[in-house]
Length: 88
Image 1 (cartoon, rainbow, N blue to C red):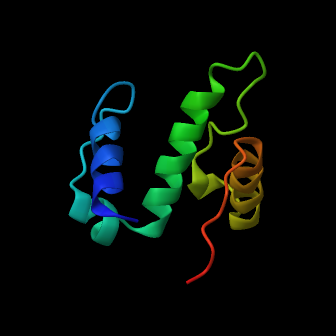
Image 2 (spheres, rainbow, N blue to C red):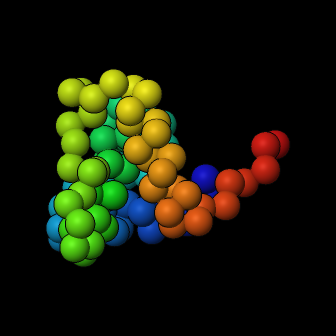
């Protein structure tokens, strides 16, 4: 991911409702994978709050099997029609 993209993500995460402060370096190099997955889960839960259906993303990933996390986030990516970047 390019630095301008990471900078934008850091700026947005610092604002409500997340109020999470990260530097670009922290987000890119220092944040552990489980912390990144939890962060994505928290963002998905916030997005899901706008839905009339109960959010399946309000999850502490420490209490969820890794396979369940992968399926849940994969479903989210399909729902938002995420286009994966071709492998380099």
